[in-house]
Length: 162
Image 1 (cartoon, rainbow, N blue to C red):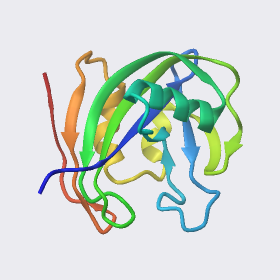
Image 2 (cartoon, helix red, strand yellow):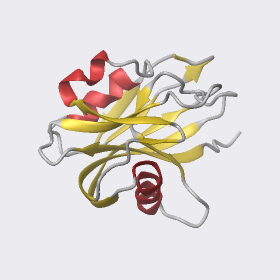
Image 3 (tube, helix red, strand yellow):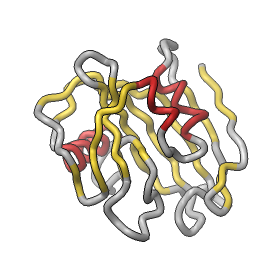
Image 4 (cartoon, rainbow, N blue to C red):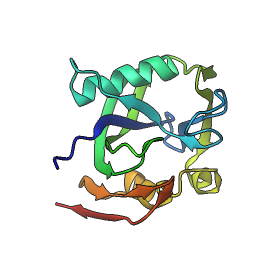
């Protein structure tokens, strides 16, 4: 059977000094698959856009800012991650520069600047603790990982770099 995941973006916006990350606290919609968790910004790619355009659009929609410098940090395949067991394939970016002032909230929750060293203390998806160090490390190579989920739980994690 062919792998036909939902293609999405996930972006981590750095503060101008690089010490904090703009995170969304998913606290606005009851029934949200991510309710209570902190996450980067992003979402599904539209049929008429490339991955970079999708990332820019999602950040514009969710945070009200325009990305001016982005880096692709990696890709992650999340088989079984969706609310109903859907497969997801995510392109993970760091946003190094932006224009505008981020919104305080959006329909999904509150936007908060979080010190990079505090991120592991937040309520995150279990798997985020495995790949987030790769997002923010000094290795210029992109990572490419697979993180299967079943019933909302991470089963394993493996990645490679070229």
